[in-house]
Each structure stands twice: as C-alpha cells, then as structure tokens.
Amino acid sequence: MTSPLENLIRTTLTDLAEEAPTVQDQLQPAERRARTRRRATVTMGAVGTLAAVLIAAPLAIAQTGSDAPRPAAPTAPPTPSARPAEPTPSPSADATRKPRPPLPDPGVPHDPSASPALPDPGVPTPSPIDPPVSARPSPSPR
Image (cartoon, rainbow, N blue to C red; front, side, top):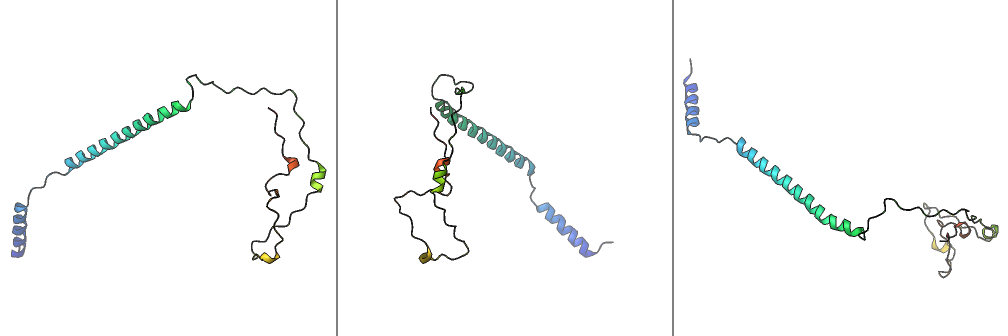
C-alpha cells in the first residue's frame, strides 16, 4: 500500500522528468576539444623547434670562421728537449719583508683612533692572496 503522499511525490517527479529538456552527450564534444588542443600543442612545439634550428644553424656556421674544414684534433706544440731551470726564491727578499699586522677581530667594534696610519696610495702593497714576487713563475719564452 502506498500513501497519498508517496503518490503525490511520484506524480510530481514524473511530471518534472517529462518537462526536463534532453541533455546532449557531453563526451564527444569534450574529446573533440582535447584532440584539437593536443594538435595545436604539438604543432606549436614543432614550429618552435624549427625556428630554433633556422636561427641557430647560420650562427653556428658563422662561428666556424672559414670555409676550410677544421682539423680533427689540435696539433701538439713541440716539446723542448731540455727543461729550463725553475726559479728559486731568494732568501734576501724574505728577510727584508715586514711582518703583517694581525687581522682585526670581527666581534670587536672598530676604533678609528687606534688604527695605524694608512700606507701611501702611490706605493703598491702586496695583496694577501698574491704570492711573493720571488715565488711567481717567470714567463715562458715563446
């Protein structure tokens, strides 16, 4: 047995179902849009690659210089039969050198009145990272 309320709900739902418009299948248009988007993406990728090749090829050819083919490997420079003597540091240069003052502690505030006078800017001073003049290798004769 059904109650009159159930019958009323059933007839109302049936009336609504008959009045509702038919819905088209949304799968086919969505698949079509996805295929079109995929084709456009692949096409733009191919166009970008082609553009890169067309721009880079003339630049690469221009970098080679002449029309003559390049050697397969660079030629080795001739090796000298006797090695030149290596320079040795002179002890007198190290003896005349003044010791450097210690670096200031970064945790202590700087007092400008306690610092020593600055060296003359016209006189070159060695950098802490430069090797001593006597330890620098002499230029090789070519």
